Image (cartoon, rainbow, N blue to C red; front, side):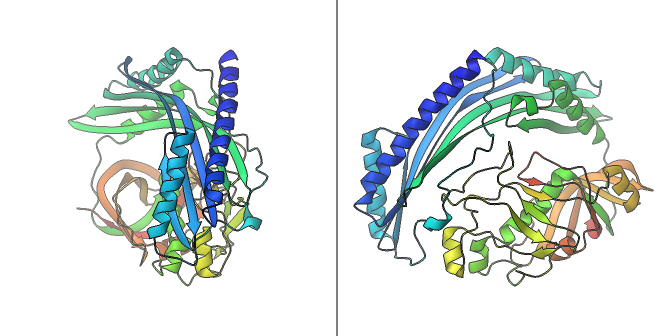
Length: 450
């Protein structure tokens, strides 16, 4: 308890220092620019790793930076500094002002609209400092690794266990009078091992992550899951080229919807560089599927009261009953499109894709025969056409049951067709991502094998 209270008092002191730094920078810029915005953050924490129970690395870090953007006569200049002394802040502000003199004027540049700003930032319960000493952190990492190593004699090597615990403070202010900040924590524990059988070697990992230590799985769970995942990959087979149903397991299904983020980002829309250019207000997913955004989810890993421009975040339906309702807009992209910012400068905030209540085992039964994808490789996705082609590994399924692991295959399709034809989304929700969804069943994809 004493350690946690010490961290809390340190963070409160840090926050005051950061607020003063932001106020100083804004004051220096006020008479020399038409508008300015300042963001400053500081992250402090510990990272440890072990291998065969021995300490490999113990790293304490305390990193901070201030960034300022000024606008003058529609010209923009930005500069940053890791030194928060008054002299360094003054130099940084002057550097941003100097840069703005040489940039081209842009009528869409400027501070976010005042009426959209988060002058009152809600407490999202993101700050849960840990009472973990270096020795305790090392023990947690070693226990996770040891649990994996002891699970099966076929596990012959280890890449180690690791534990991370960090707390941070973010403060944002701008020339409209906004000055807000919040504190957050993030803790994680992982292990990675190698299994061997009949000359075949496979590796995999497992991890747990949360805002509070109490949200983490036990080291023994992490180790057991790591061992299970690694052993399941042994003796993979290749598939012949075919078309077949595909289940994207939950850990890769999040990425399937991650491609939607880039496709509906305002920058891609105003550049006309997205295959969903004419899709606003049109159906892009099955009519039973909705994507909700919950930026104020308590303890959420992607929760935030405001975006990186200070615009307040709000609960939204990104897709409602299969229909795209929203572009993801920053202030700049919104102005280019004649719209208002949606609070997406810096990314998305806790997307939730509601499933249909089927368990993963029920989805296997519904698929019958086909491929379960658990790993994807490569970047073979076109933002212009939606064409999708990526290396994959996973499991072959027959009669609703997993038969054997497969590797060295490529799956291909087009995202428009893939999204529209989703058969079902499972209830095995992956919560460790900024996109939360279960496994996804597609009726057919091209599978290129041997």
